Figure 1 (cartoon, one colour):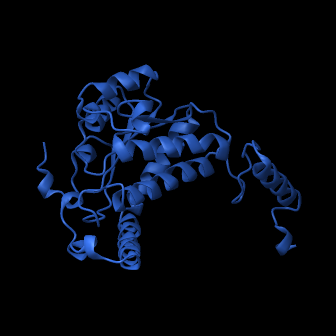
Figure 2 (cartoon, one colour):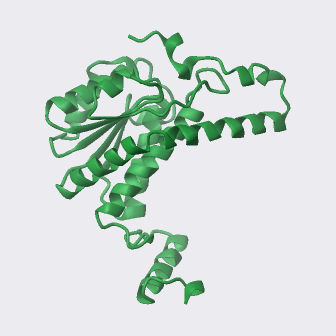
Length: 256
C-alpha cells in the first residue's frame, strides 16, 4: 500500500502549525482561505468531471444506476448525495445508491476494519444486484482505501463503467477506474482530517455529477426542479411556484 506520509492529504499545513493558539476569528479566516483551495482544485479537473457526467447520463438513459462507494467521510458524502436525489429529482431511491463500508452503522460511528476489507465491497455490490448497466463511483480522499479499490475492480470486471474521486494525484483508486477525478486539495488545516478540504471538494464534484446527469436526462426544465416531491409545506410552495413559472412560459414573476 501507499506510504501515507507521501500523500498530500496527510502532510502538515505550514499555515496552521499554531492552530491551537489561534483566536476564533483567526481559525475562521484560515479555514475559509484554505477552502478556496478546494474550489480551485476542482476547477483543475473539470474535464474529468464532465466525462463522469456524460457516463452517468448514458447509464441512466440505458436503465442503469449511479452507485457511490466509499468509507468514512467519503462514504457518508456518497450516501448524502444519493439520499437527496429522490426528493430533488423525483427518481426512485434505487436509481442513485450510496454504499458505505460498514453499512448504516458507519453513518454515525466508525466501523473498525471495514474500509480495509478487500472483499466487503464486492459483497455489498452483489447485494444490490450490480450489473453492467450501472456506473460505480468510488470515493477515497487518500486514494488508497482497499474497500474502494476492490469495489471498483469488481465493478470493472463485470462490465460496469467506473469513476474514481480522490484528492491525490496518480491514486490507486484512479488506476482502477475508467475516469479518474483527482483534485489536489493539499494539506488540511488539521493534519490528515480529510473531512475538511478534501471532503468539500468531493461534495462539490458529487453535486456536479448528480445534478448534471439529472439535467441531461430530462429531470430538469430550464433550471427548475420539475420533479421535486412536495413532501412538506416548503416543497409544496416551491412546486406551486414552479408550475406557475412553467405556465408563464418559463419566466419568473420579476421577469414578466
